[in-house]
Length: 187
Image (cartoon, rainbow, N blue to C red; front, top):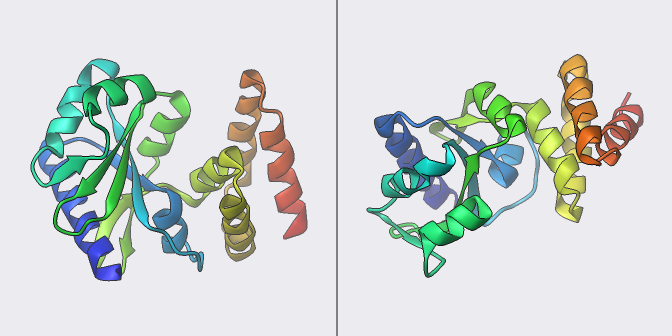
């Protein structure tokens, strides 16, 4: 399955670069790139797009991908993401639009890193940790434990804490609390 992921990532990177649309890899594959031992079954990316550009984003993937929703543009406009599948590799690709300041900042901070032999744009470890804290699923908690343990000494704590505090404004005071708990656990 690793080869299918490589082929899919290479294709995504090529399409986005050709279209000059910034993207960032997030989710399970980003966690794996940073050292998580988890597995995943899909690719999660965030693409820079305005609401009126969602149709253009879909066109980037129109040839070679099929939508897993019967009306992809309508779904994309309603949910701000769309699930696709690469026709050749059969890998699911969830494409999200970077509409919030948090997503856009994460996209701007992205770095080029390798997944096996393929170089892709991936979110920073700090942004990935914040996304995992926000998602708060069991698999995210496992990723958080592994990733904080591996990267604790290299983390940009000033950035992490400042970004986590921003979530208090949207009634997510648990985000900075969970971050501090994790940082204490792996001093």
